[in-house]
Image (cartoon, rainbow, N blue to C red; front, side, top):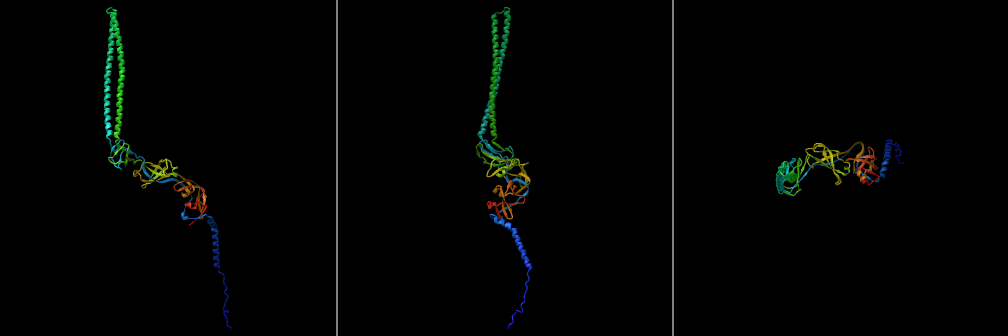
Length: 423
């Protein structure tokens, strides 16, 4: 009988591995906890209308703090006073300055050669001299005429006195019977004639004196009128010397040297560098809040100056409105026309305001809703916005401090109520 190995076999008792069981139990509990914790999010994920990558979106957190409404833009230096000079008469122009030259008020910048105007002045001046001679001759003639009339009047009075004495003498002689009554009557007639002659001489003296005065006045008015014409021509001849109306700098020359121009042709422009302003372009949406007298800041060349809004254009061009700021105080000397500067105009400043960074969501939704982000899900939430600035928007309703919203890229949501955001 062959012996087997049954006598050598031993029953081995396998003891349970409690450590491994504990690890399995703990892992099961963790997995179950994760499933319980992620269940709401997984539910929202499956309930979302779509999924958008976070790299395509921009987010911002609602904050509470100071709110400053301002307009920031790039401006350029322009001259508040930049007159353009024109030719007052046609002729050949001689330029006395070059573009960029510094000039003083009253300095001659160009001279216009107009023989026609200068000859006309000489002719009218000659006419004025002739009229002055006529006026003086009329005065001499009037004095002679007055003298003659006065002489006639004086002679008439002497004849009257002679007639009175003759009448008195004849009356005395007639009373004594020395002369007949006929001589007395003749003396009376002579006296009457003398009285009439005196009256007429006195009347002629008054009437002729008025006539002479009228003639002299007529000559004087004609001479004065001619003097006014000469004065106007002198002014026109003087204007042939084109002078600078301000202290400043020659801007642009519109003609070439020795060019012949017509009346009212552009000659050159002068820039008053002591009255510079800064012109800026403001978006139409902000222009309605802009007002004359608002304060601002002008910066450039490492300096900052205070400015005041001095003018606002009444028209909109390409969606923008032009506005000008003048320097509050002395105009800086180092600025040049058309130089670029940064401009900031303060519209409003408030404290303790709920705000969020400005984004395209304001324009896309009209400020009526925003996508509130929570646990990777963006939910469409009704809101109400207030005032807005360049970088912030005031939140009046619908959000609270600390909320996170999507500020740009919501066009890809296509108006969905909920959207999952993937990393």
